[in-house]
Length: 293
Image (cartoon, rainbow, N blue to C red; front, side):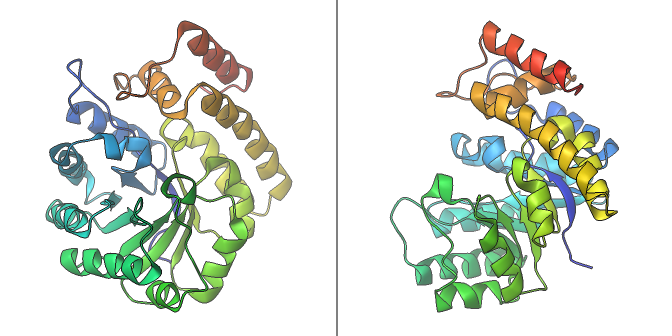
């Protein structure tokens, strides 16, 4: 059994009316997803608007999630450009009971592969927790380079528990699994979940799982029980909704729908904008058309 498998919502961050973090609503969101069958949670990541949060707010998310540490698996995103900052997050995640940490590749400055690998060793060792590498080249501008001996050694080391592969290059996901069959391979784009399962993924960490986890559970179980055509038909249905959310603004759409589902998230942080009335109508129509509530 891999340590991490199944479906993990990349949890959104709810805000109060004054714009500050709302821990009560965050806990309601996690409870909702647990009741829907979540295997665990990926907290304080991209869907949580991580780089728009203060350091105290990110740590407050770890603290709020700690209420669930004995009933589910918590992966805390601790990514930052600087190692020292990421180490502070990693230690705080450990203090609040996270089971694993994760981080994007350090970005902006064009760090080399040795510097990137040392970043992951340092945060894992500081927290004494295994790390899930968060591969998101579309946002970080940095690709995970499997031709590098430093990166290959990192992936094969005992500090790495898995990969969150938010990259349309699913061939790379398969190659990572071939390099180290013992780590968990987690798909990161909701619209490629079925394809990633075909290439060996153990599950998915996804933004859309906040609002439509039961539908993705149907895809996951259909695929794993051999109903591949049915899984693909459900994936296509999901992808029409993913496309609509992306068209209107992914995080803004997720927060709009979560609020309709009873989780008062507040609007996203600027420079994001809440949905317009026309966009709300568009999202409502798409959700209704594909019978997702």
